[in-house]
Amino acid sequence: MNVARRYLIETFGCQMNVHDSERMAGLLEQAGFEPTDDAAEADVVVINTCSVRERAEEKLYTRLGQLRQLAAEQGHDPIVAVAGCVAQQEGANILKRAPGVADIVVGTQAIRRLPVLVAEAANRPRARGQAALTDLNPYDDVTWPLGTTRRADPVKAYVTIIEGCNEFCSFCVVPYTRGHERMRPKADILAEVREAAATGHREVQLLGQIVNHYAAPDDAACDFTALLEAVHAVDGIDRIRFASPHPRHVSPRFLDAMAALPKICRHLHLPVQSGSTRVLEAMRRRYTRDSYLALVADIRRRLPDVALSTDMIIGFPGEGAADFDETLSLTAAVRFHSMFSFKYSERPNTLAEKRMADDVAEDEKTRRIVALQALQRDIQAELNAALVGQEVDVLVDAASRRRETELSGRTSTNVVVNLPGPASWIGTMRRIRVQRAGPHSVWGTVADADKAGFDRMALEA
Image (cartoon, rainbow, N blue to C red; front, side, top):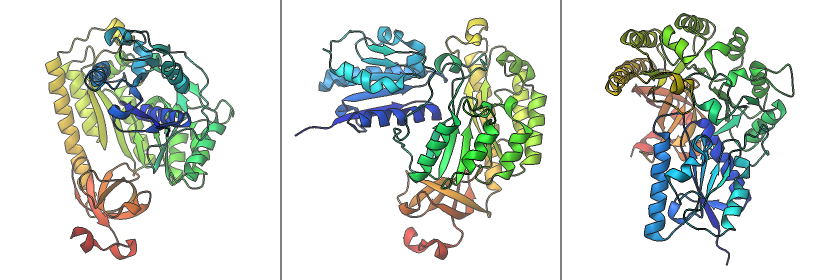
């Protein structure tokens, strides 16, 4: 009897990495592998890495050490592939720091070769300390075979529209790990969106490092706004999200289209990174505090129901107390619905790493980020509390990890809503009355229990 070969993919990082893992899963399954959640029974373990945040490399080497220990203690020695941004960034250095563990190092732009590399690794004699098969080639082809991706989410489908970035912000490693900006053809994108709709995915999220800089290589008239209009016309898709736009590429035409197209979610992630014009200039963001605030005012005028979220870096080189105060005051003025905030850490090859001293003390970075997160938590608690008593439309997308009879979903404005209900509701839209709120989510019940088709008393019993 043939024993199925199994694979495990462990993913660190952003939505782009999650989607890359979905692609690699599809490739491995086409090659005859089956998924597993246990490294002790996997024939192939893929570690899909991220290098944008601090300690990304250490997470990789810690995991490689655990796999080495697994081989030593249990005699189980799977083929180990390191993929993603750290693979692209570190290359052969991975073999020096963790010798004898990785069999394959595959870069961000070469993941389509993963099954070939796995087959080559399986067919050659394995010896600890041997060189890994490495492919870091910067391919320019961004097409992808339709139907290959094994989507992990039954409700939401990620669809990449841009690979790479040309912005070269001084803190960011993406141009060095993902390459220069390359656009996918409009025809490929729409084919993937239609395929996602046909397989029951009710929400699509368009992905790109600077998603709103899109320009179709196969249609000179198609910019990001036109692409949104085309995706909006696809039957079976109820919600459209995208990440992440750059503030300097947000146009009035885009905002007007967003207001006019009901499938586009009323949520806009608008990374600001700092509230100080001086720091923004050092970051090479190419906008100022005042221009960002003016953009926010224009967005709120055209889209009064929009929820804004952002990214913030604390302790960038040269950030003084006055600069940080400006970050706090901008946060208070804008009142973001959510925020990803990080302490600055040097990223390899970036302009900041090469030219700027990391001169803000670590304890001061910690003090500042704690203060910022406390302010943001209060703002989120107030915004969510304002929803209590209101009815909101929620696309249910998952079962609760805490309670068997509880589900979760999101509003158009990206607020997480927890609600009681059966698993059969996943993938459906529900009208929910919000009953209580916290800083990170709200809780409610269906607005009309009888019409929704469940007995609340039975669920609470």
